Image 1 (cartoon, rainbow, N blue to C red):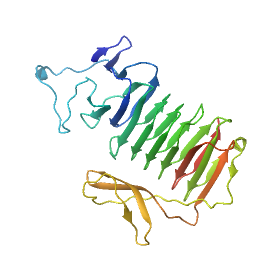
Image 2: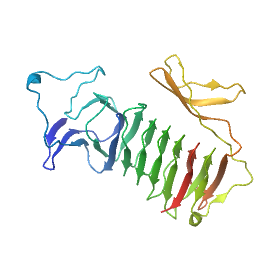
Image 3: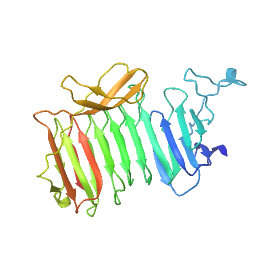
Image 4: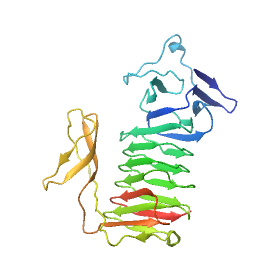
Length: 292
């Protein structure tokens, strides 16, 4: 069941009756917020003066993307089993899309465009989150995890208000990673950077594991073809294994590999006796771990 409405607060809305499953977002940016309802609600601010093309009356907009605006918001929303797929009809969407989702919905966000990108804000989500972008700045607010966040050029700011559930991995290649935890958080933490610095609040009292040398990791990008496969394994000249290869239109991006630089910093430790795994990495910028 779906509905398209214009709310009293001058917002265009599209509602989809769905309280579980996975929401796959392939758009330039969004604000995604968890709530205790049973509908996915998409909305964008309504323009005060929307131009009406008289010549287009009786016709529908089409696009080379192959998607159709079935929402009135510039996006195509379709369902397949437990998956809800959201794609931009045109490369650039007017305004930031806000999406309210029931707490049981899993979130997957992918944007590999180097031209069209907006900020990604994810907040109050209690289920799994996966983000893979090239340029988007990412903000995470009051999410519990588990989550896997990867960005090539964007920065990541994350604030956890409650205990972390499941593994959390936040990685940026060329941007900073800034995370705040409550004082009573329990985590097995790993922090790493090749060319930046690591910072942590004294109040968190990280018990650094000095007996086990943390495995150093670096990040790079490559271009080429992987014969249409989404994930594969490549070996460097030294025989080291590269992983997490994602293909987008014939271009491949590697986010992590087993290498290091002279300036690299890497620590492993426990916060409040240990708990869920928390991995924070940036190759070229700093990593910050704060006490909330």
